[in-house]
Length: 127
Image (cartoon, rainbow, N blue to C red; front, side, top):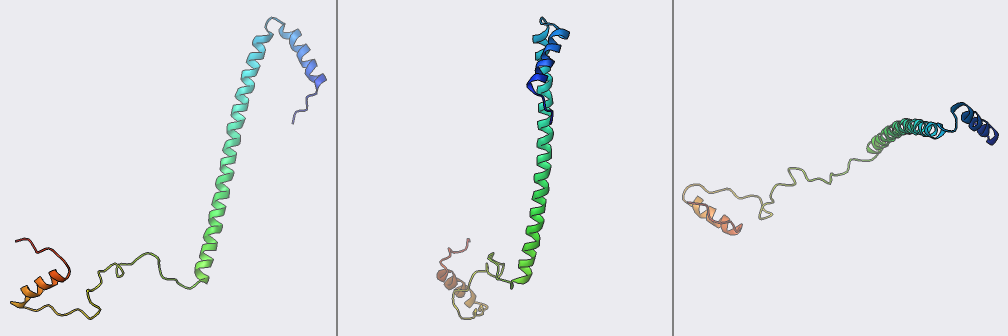
């Protein structure tokens, strides 16, 4: 950007020594170094902010493309069964493949309950 050659740098040093003087030159160079360091920090901070904005824009663009491709795939492919169990899948299966038998009423109900608990290996109900 700034093309400073050796002859131009030598001229700047000579002018600085004449204007500032050899006695105050180290302090002037320290001050100039601090200013240059601050300018570099500001420019690096600005550059990193721009890079973050570019990355964020690229990420949003990639997410948009992914969403579009996902929608196209979902429309093109047939509906596949879900890998996650539904409420119907999570119901306890019956103990026998035969249809559930009706629960007896009256005195037979206690005997039926006890036999069902024994079949399912359940502890007796509390008194």
